[in-house]
Length: 267
Image (tube, rainbow, N blue to C red; front, side, top):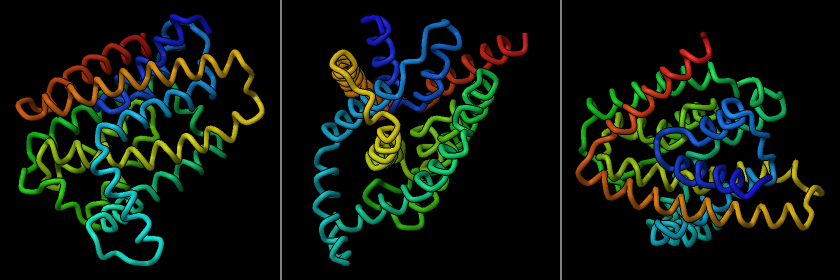
């Protein structure tokens, strides 16, 4: 990969991983629309690692709480706030791991990486996000996350396995419909990304083992670094804007891009 292509892939992943606009959809579109070669699994793993470090650092107090709670959860104790948070994160992650593994082994993941699919999901789930954001109440805060809501958001997260849906977008959509305020919905969705990214990265790594060489390792390290910086910036900007701005700007972008892609696909 050229340095420009490497930076482009990393920045696209970093900027779109946590914004509700679909990172997988944008990365799938890159080779389809530009004719550039696919970045490969090793780079996919690297940019996932970069974005993982970004969300862990940005939400470190919450992540540290969940990590400490995980130790108690392993011992069968759910007697602290951290243990309950770890339990909710685990429950919300199980559905996407199961369905994601099935899609991976059946090869459906490649079948869904088309401009037509991405166009429809970008448009459709963008409108669903707008509807949920406009009609959802704001009674709940992130601290009131429950087992029931974790399970429902986990089921919604399965839809993100379809390119163009957006993992953060669909989990934020579910959270807003469940009554969480915008900042709380985004915070929960970002915390849900930690075990999900770890699981998806581990699954991708199984196909990468044995492929690495010095040049690929260098490219992967650069990709992870650029993705980290882009993701951290995108996270900080979105969380700050949510104090005063709705999700409508992201919806407008999704609808516009979705229409453009559908016109291009069916032309």
